[in-house]
Image 1 (spheres, one colour):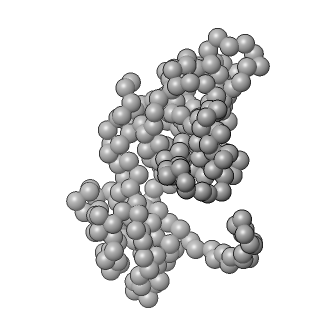
Image 2 (tube, one colour):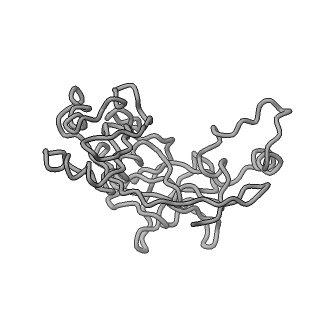
Image 3 (spheres, helix red, strand yellow):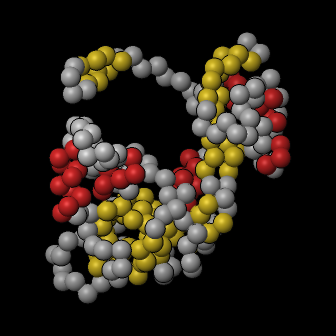
Length: 242
């Protein structure tokens, strides 16, 4: 049992541990929903039902099945260890967390705890599109603070692509080229190697403009990076000029 709170009252939430397994079909897009049907599932996993889920009972196994798409991987999420074991026995291959992280970063998707958290507001986390400032008469908690941030500017979440050899990783420092030591620096929030672009990519929170020449400190050495606008890849095709 954990406690949660909103701005009016405290509430209690009961948390249940649900085994989670992610698999990526390796049999092509035309058959992307066929493997779950090996279990008798798939009734609510049609091609158009992306990001929808629902409870199903399959061979005496209660599961929650959902479809999600990360860039070029059509995936199913099954909250059932028993169902996953049956699928695995029939040849469905798992995609590990590293593969999922690469896909979501190529898609420019935030990861909670890295690219967004309780210490950074939406305008600092690439999530300005989630805030409805219009109409002006619409009131919500934090509006005045966000309005001030919009007027005064501040750090923004941007994409980075490494121009040199190396791999971008979380917590690496991002600095504007030519600035003196001690000048404001940004930080990589998520980084990995993109197999689609054959380059290292990252999301970073930086305090300088998008046209600034920037460098990243990788193990004590400065490497040139370019600020770009995510996403990096969509439907398996590069959106960033290499």
